[in-house]
Image (cartoon, rainbow, N blue to C red; front, side, top):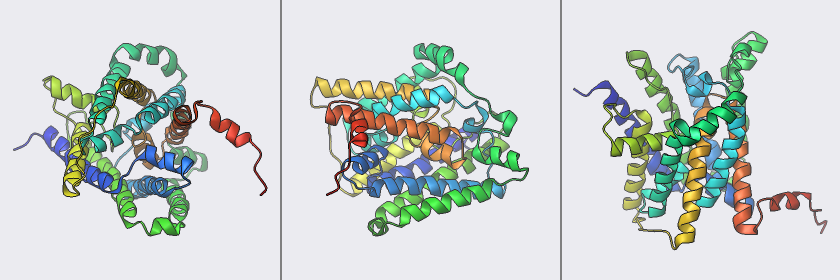
Amino acid sequence: MLESGWVLALSGCAVGGVIGFAARRSHFCTMAALERHWYASDDGQLRAWALAALTALIATQVLAATGAVDVTQSFYLTEPLPLAGAIVGGLMFGFGMALVGTCGFGALVRLGGGNLRALVVLTGLGLAALAAQRGVTAHLRVALLDPLSVDLNSYGGQSLGALLSTMFGVDIALPLALAIGTAGLWWVFKSASFRAERGRMIAGLVIGLCIAAGWAITSGHAARSLDPVQVEAGSFVMPVGDTILHIIAVTGELPDYGVGLVIGVFLGAAVSALRSDDMRWEACDDARELGRHLLGAFLMGTGGVFALGCTIGQGVSAFSVMAISAPIVMISIALGARMGLGMLVEGTPFGFIADWRAPKSSG
């Protein structure tokens, strides 16, 4: 009979396999979504990403309201709001994401298709995350960023639902989530072109439901287990570092849900690539490209730990529990990505500011 820890890891692998398959099949990528929105006026991928986040929000809050999941022990809600870390880390992550062309999750999906640049990125990201969590750069985080965290527990908690429920004296978490979800889904589906993209719609729904499933699996396991279990749903910064540790060292600890999720996403993406004959071996063209990928990986791994998450961790998982940190981190990531793209495409990270201030043509 399998030890309970292995059940948790295998559950993560199964859920990750579904996510990886769906993401590879539909080319689900946060960086690509932002880039096409800014440079091609195409928001189809952005709507798919929003659909995943909104689906996760509604499903998670419905499960929480019925008592099927308990997300109150999630570190998004138990840790103080890392205000400085959210902004600085988000900017770093977004800038690094632009240098690489994708995030940690996207790198796993690309690796499943044979992209060796993604292997370089994931190795650098994982090592940088470990250093920021418990190594050299962790000293900077503890000294400069952690003291600027804000504890909102005295006001009700670290989520928007908890804060407003305390303010009004009644639990409004579910109605609030449904209102946000309804408004968001209206925006997603008002586009006729997006409604015609069945693959992207399915991918968004599947990924969102898988994030909600992660909360159910880990919170249920935490309630049954005598050992400490991290309640999580999906993130691709520290779990990548933890996966590297499990590969290179026997520590006596069993892999957790996050490690299983990382492995599952890679395997699911690989299966999708093989089924669609989309497996291609790719590598860096030259030393300059390799250097850019290594720098981007360092910024993403370090920034992701500073901000307590990535585009999936904060943008989907934390958003699904209405963590206050989610919009702060995602706005910072988007700004960092825009600056990074500006440097690569326009030669300056602040070119978009001039574009906004430039007078619009009346003709």
